[in-house]
Length: 216
Ligand code: GRF
Picture 1 (tube, rainbow, N blue to C red):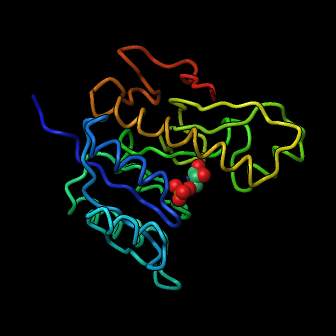
Picture 2 (tube, rainbow, N blue to C red):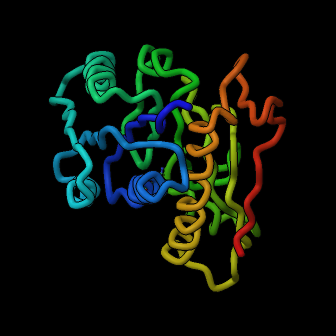
């Protein structure tokens, strides 16, 4: 039996998903181990939180004017040095270059705060409220070169309440994020989830649709 899967988490902000993943790994809910928490911002609150948990941290700060490919190579070096075999993007606010995505293809996950393919991009909660949507949620997906367009693995889904604001919706979606991201990483670590022929496979079958986790 192999040991826990080493994985790196890339953050730019608060790092609540990173903490959810780290806690799930630490208490044995998933067969993984965080090798490094890497941020493009030295002031990311999640870095301090990671250090308090005893996790190794690293800042890969793109100097002004550095092109995306150079930044991507530096990032790859940092991930490789940590020994990670999986990369979890968790609120990492930089667009990654094609070479980086190809390097980690099939081992690069992201969490997005919407029910993809709806609401790719930024400000999803605001746009969902403005459009009067009844359902909203979050998606864990494999990352491909096209932003927020890789194969979806699992979605957390909730009903939008008439009294919801951007803040309340964001908090409720995040609670679901903290459930579905560890679940997806756990599947990957257990060898149940993989990338094959441009698709997400779970338990030996291609996922035509993501697994759905409805809010309780
Ligand atoms: C989450 O809402 C995630 O969906 C998006 O960025 C946010 C990161 O939040 N990609 P946190 O830093 O994990 O708290």
